[in-house]
Image (cartoon, rainbow, N blue to C red; front, side, top):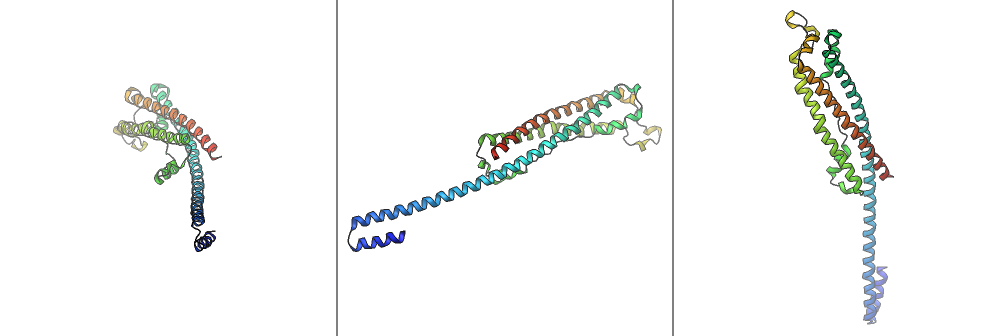
Length: 243
């Protein structure tokens, strides 16, 4: 088309028809501009299409991470409920020493030194943030919901999870190691005997330690249950956006 305009322009100049030449010259410029605009529009459309493909892939990966979160939250809750039940049984034993035998201690003391915590599945979000393309998610409400979910997760990690971990390691562990022999092979003399139920019963520290750990475990479960609700709501919103 440009070649056609060029030939016409040459003819107009040869015939000294300046006014018609200007018209065709302007038409040639307009045609070039239109071609550039069309090319830019096609490029923008291709870029937008690629961004939407990337967004969909990202949301699918976040949904996969959240599904794993839910499974892990539920698993940790089950384990923590079991440990709380055993710790509560231990309290009943040391509070009623005359109703139980000493061999009951070994079945429960080990659980005092155990704890479980949630390990976040944040690979998709981490990759998104590191890419610098967090605004690739067009739905701002959904993006806010995603960020809130992960911020709450971090708060739990720095809160009840950290408290339960630190309490078990720094309070319960050292106390038990100093208060009693944990290995039955230590029964080699009168000087290395295991503590009796009555001795546990008479020491208020062990009762307080176990009671507070049960409370921390209950707090952990309650927060995990709330986070499961948040995760399921977010998962539903992401799947709706993908569709």
